[in-house]
Amino acid sequence: MRLGTFYARLAKTCCAATLAAVLLTGCATQRQPYDYTAFRQSHPASILVLPPLNNSPDVGATYSMLSQVTLPLAESGYYVFPVSLVDETFRQNGLHNPAEMHDVKPEKLREIFGADSVLYITVTQYGTSYSVISSESRVTAEARLVDLRSGQALWSGTATASSAEGRNNSGGLVSLLVQSIVSQIVESATNQSHPIAGITSYRLLAAGMPNGMLYGPRSPKYKTDGSALP
Amino acid sequence: MKRPCCKKTVVQLSIVALLLLAGCATKTEPLYYWGDYQPQVYGYFTKDTGPEEQIASLEAGLEQARASGKSVPPGYLAHLGVLYAQGEHQDQMLKYFQAEKKQYPESTAYIDFLSRKFKQPE
Image 1: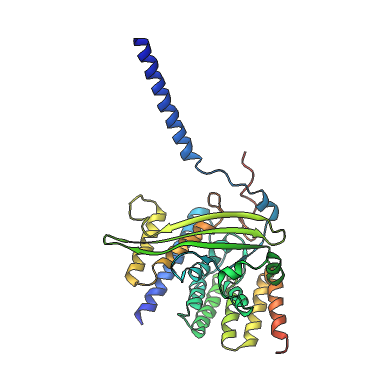
Image 2: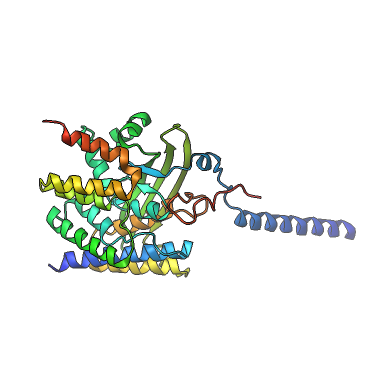
């Protein structure tokens, strides 16, 4: 009997240890490493960013996001087509909403813009929810990079940012920065979601993030990332 | 008068913060002199700032970029061209489109496509 209890206890301990190990490894390797094979073979130098599709209730989301995509991509080493001129080109050709622009065939985009790749962005969340205790501005977006020469999908990702992330005091420079921006916005009473969209855009599109974009040819870090993992 | 000023400060602060964030991740300094480029583009889309105001801000930014020894980012010069086009200054527009092409040869096919369109008789 006593031996039985011992074995039961041993089994329990083993179970707990296994569970802990699984949880820990889970933490360490939360994400599968991204397969950059197609991206590295394509190595695009230029990116045409189309005005984002907007699935949020805020009509301002498309251009709030579009006006803030150039910085992370250009600083990552890509040529980003002039977003205002690109939008105007579509309008001159009778396309006035992002859905129509996203429907244009890759060959046609390549012909007009001569871009190596196109980035399709969808804003899924954009806006401020108000409650008695506090309000929260949240912006979430997903992106898909496609090679315009081969039509091949190169990369996709998603990111979110919220004005509430600094509040739980979890610390860190990033949350401090977010918090300081947010308190500024509250004081000035402008569109609260716009700076949050800037953070979302950065998290989504800057190279060097886990499973993020790779560096482009104009960056000193070009070809230093996304290599096959050992 | 006070609100646009505050708004500008907020936008600038957020750029500074973003660059700081970029600094954290990559430990390199920015490749470009950004000035007010992205806030001006936002103002262009929302129509909160008129073409003259934007041109003044971006032309001043060009001077500051020269002084800092950095280039202006992709799209900066072409956006100036768009603003001049709004004011019917087609010569200035084409000048800035060519400047974009010269600084960023990746835009050659697109700028040539646009230039051909403008040269066509109406």
